[in-house]
Every structure is written in C-alpha cells, then in structure tokens.
Amino acid sequence: MLQELGSVKEKYDKLTALLSDPDIVSDQSKVKNLSKERAELEPIVKTYISLLKINKSIKGSREIIDDPDAEEELKELAEEELQELEKELEKIKKDYRGILDVMVIDVWKNPDAATKYNIRLIPTQIFYDATGKELTRHEGFMGKKDILETFKRFGIKLENI
Image (cartoon, rainbow, N blue to C red; front, side, top):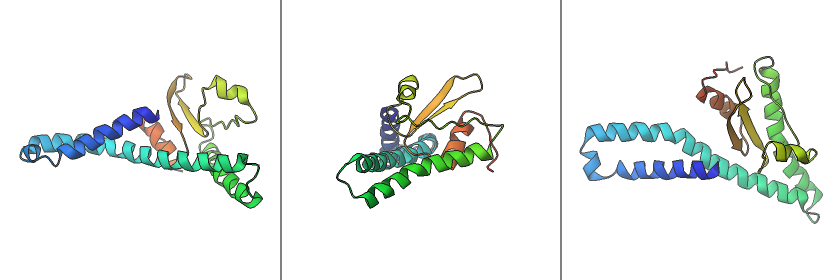
C-alpha cells in the first residue's frame, strides 16, 4: 500500500513540476487539465504523508512498549497513543450501528487473525463491501473523518454523525 501511495506522490510531484514549466504555463488548456489531475491527487498525497508520520509514531510507540528497559511512565504514554485508534473505531461502531460493522482484532492476543487477514502493520483497517469483498485497506492510524471519506470514495455515503 505504501508503495502505491508513494507512486501517487511521485506523480503528484511531477504534476507540480509540470505546472511551473513555462511551456505548460503558456497553454491554459494543459494547465487546467494538469491542475485538475493534481487536485484529485492532493488528498491522497496528504493522507500518504500523514500515514508515514503516523506509522513512524506507531513503530516508535510499539518499540517503547516492547522495550524491557523503558521507563514505565513512557510505556504508559505509548500505550495511550496506540489506544486512540481503538477509541476512534469504537465511536464509529457506536455511531453507525446497524449501518456498518466495525471489528477490532488484537493480533497480539489473536496471532492467527494476523495471518488470516494478512496484517503486516498495526493498526490496519480493512474495508469490505456488503458481499464481503475487500475494497481497500489502510495501514496506520486513521481517524473517523478519514474512515468516512474512504467509504465515500467507494460510493457509500454515510451521514457524519
């Protein structure tokens, strides 16, 4: 997933460079088309950059938690950070009861689930359609707003409760 998002960012960067090319700037039709394409990629690129930062933070938190020499207070702070995702998912689960099914699986407690669902990074959100087909997955922290936007991308419009 990160590789795919990385290639989207590369395309975004190329479009940004093209939009400052004097040959392109002189052609308003090209500027309009390239600007539109770049604008469509912008939210994905912003998510990608956030994802990189969050993954780094999660990795650091997990390392602190697993470090036997880390101070207990520091471990507690790292655990609190990791628990934010669970709280966010629980809120969505409650708010959209009967509309969405939200499951939280602790792969540390249930390692077979990590294999079954091909979990490579914690946390991972997997989005399925009503038939059980996987639509997409996201590795790293994802807040309520981003989760709702993901459903919206697949034509599933949910009221922001």
